[in-house]
Image (cartoon, rainbow, N blue to C red; front, side, top):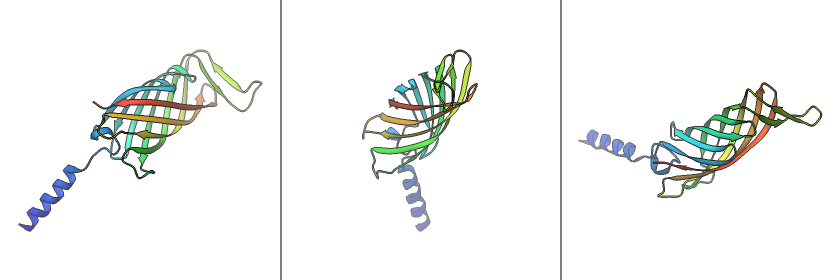
Length: 165
């Protein structure tokens, strides 16, 4: 009888735990819009309690259209159920005209008129999940390093909203 009670206690504890950290109402997939660099659509897929993949498609100085994929780690720096910080690396592909800056040359800027640009980025942000809502509000900023066809860098910053159906 004692073993049965222990097993029931463990099962109830595991079942009642939220399996997706700071996601609204424990949902795994959210989508929305973001404004800044890039401006466009965003999709977040939680892969664990503190980890998520984010895919953004939109317009940017790095290229339009631009696609970036980030892997994020979330950490509760505020000891809050509403606000949480996150950080992680990502990859970027920009098509068409691209702009950025670097630390040599005449004017310090590079311009890509055609083709695709490939880069990496590091992102840091905060997400706010109001209680009892299917929404996530986020602000993020980071550095983008263009690797191909030219080496350069740029700064990304965006404000967005995701809905978790």
